[in-house]
Length: 74
Image 1 (cartoon, rainbow, N blue to C red):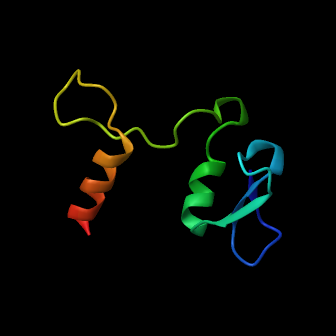
Image 2: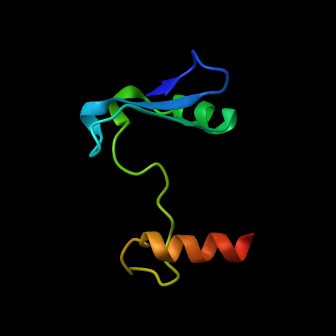
């Protein structure tokens, strides 16, 4: 859930959803918060982005592959 009660939009993650059992507030770019708000509440599950693999039919990219691509982009 995006929290707008703080200076910048932030994810407000309840303690019961965290492995550490501690509440966490993570700031996000206002543009990203706006993007998330365009998704109907019933569709708000799963991944936000689904990066396409280099080869059609290959499995979804893993975290390390996405990191490498982002580093190359800059």
